[in-house]
Amino acid sequence: PAPAAGAAPPPAAAACGGGPGRRDGQGSLLAASAQQLSTPGSTSAAPAPRPPVGGAVLCESAARGGLSYGTCKLRDGRLLAYHVEGSGVPVIVFHGMGSSRLTWLGTEPLSEICPGVQLVAIDRPGYGGSSPPPLGYSYSDFARDVAELADHLRLPRFCVAGHSSGGPYALAAAALLPGRVVACAAISSDAPYSHLAAPPELREADDFNQPAVLSDSGLYGQEPRAFAEGMRRSALEKGAPAKAHAWKSGIDGWLLDFMLERLPWSFRLESITLGPRLSIWVGSEDVEAIKIGTPFMQSLVSGSQVRVVQGGNHGFKSDPKHLAAILTELSQHW
View 1 (tube, helix red, strand yellow):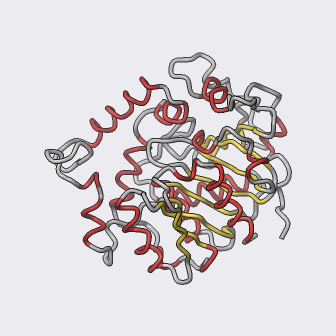
View 2 (cartoon, rainbow, N blue to C red):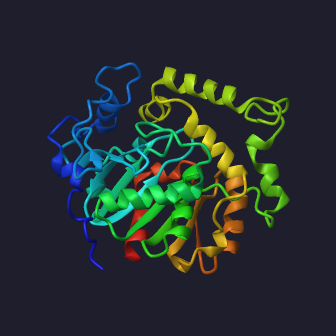
């Protein structure tokens, strides 16, 4: 079917005035976006919200060149920040742990690397410009948030993709929104470590599950909040746009990811009915836990496919050719 609203700007974009964020040959869009939305302590980091559009969407700013920003006010009052790039088949994408929606902005326009796709990138709860998650928040709650956002963007159907810790969120949407999610890409995704059938080597490969006395990233025997605060300080000091934007509002997003990945998931991977429209992507040089978890997840979802990127590490999706391959495959299922 033709994308119902994917080819046209969403309501928030249409209501916004022009603003900074133009692309140039030096790939300055990411820096411009970060300056506008992410710089710690900057008085211009978050423009004053304008009146709601249609009672639901608040407009932060807009950028020229096919990129627009928005903030969706959810039914419970929380805000979900997002940006939209390109036009065509809608793909809602979810960043990884300690990252933000800015990680989906490349140095080249999306219209050049993958024409015919509209990318909707969100700051997941607790990251960037989005509100922190409420007590007891789960992957299932996130799927409901995605459905609300899609309603406000007038997207009856859409594809989803999630990178790293964003993978389980994409899988949750695929499992719980079967009438709306057309296809899903889980990219270097974490697997359900607490699944009853999880192989022992999967849990053993989880770096965070190691004793703190044996590993710098081991959290057995240390306070996760203190660990996350240290990561936040480091990210803000380094100032990399996607990371600084991620941590600007605190550590709640990181703590949520850490806990949800290692608790029993609130949905069943086995309930996903996409078959070959679910692709699980992994780099041949990826993190060990991801390499072990990929075939395990495929075994749980009948008909799903594995895509191995030769030479790819955990961040291979940031290479334009790999991102184009992922988005192209999703759009072919449309």
